[in-house]
Length: 222
Ligand SMILES: O=P(O)(O)OC[C@H]1O[C@H](OP(=O)(O)OP(=O)(O)O)[C@H](O)[C@@H]1O
Ligand SMILES: O=c1cc[nH]c(=O)[nH]1
Ligand SMILES: [Mg+2]
Image 1: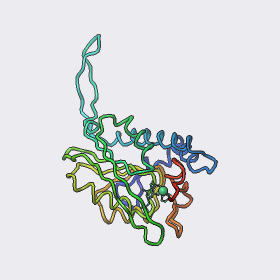
Image 2: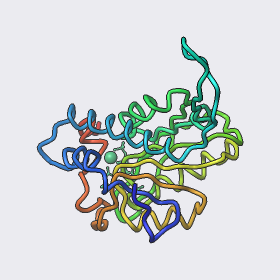
Image 3: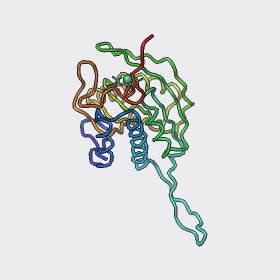
Image 4: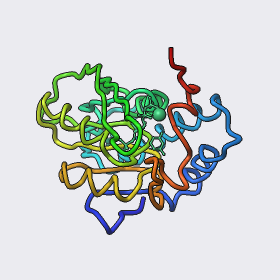
């Protein structure tokens, strides 16, 4: 886990060969939707595992069948809300919840319009009540301009104040991170990698393309 010195609370995993290998497969244009979704599930699982390293724990005493001994309880793992940003976060959430299995789940839809406006349409919001001891994990594989996540955070914060807000993603562009940190300085970010820049259409470079389309196929218009 590497803390990026350009911001506070922003971490990436370029020191982890396993996470980088999964990311390489996701980036590769030859990777089809089945392997792409599987890669997102795997990343979700490993990123959740990394997040547990930053959670509060408690020492407990338990009995094995033979004697009493020390044990560990990750208290924060019992108080998690995962917000899934449709569409591309569905497989990522599936991986996250394997490790954060006590999580309550919120679903929000967000669709970004084309450049240069990048307006975010949010039609569907189902979020559980958020309590003071909750860690709210917002899953969205791609953090490009940051517009989607700023809007999601604005909305999610209406449901109560959490202990931590943590964005989990696959790739982020520096401009998107800066915009989110400006609007929501209390937010932490765990992403597999931070890429170079955005192109004029708002795609991350080198990136992996459109995560939603790669996972589920391009939607058609009627
Ligand atoms: O940081 P931003 O510039 O706001 O862009 C990032 C958003 O773009 C993608 O969603 P998209 O709108 O393509 O929806 P989809 O998941 O349904 O494809 C991605 O999953 C993010 O939610
Ligand atoms: O590169 C990008 C940017 C936004 N959304 C994506 O799916 N990919
Ligand atoms: Mg998309």
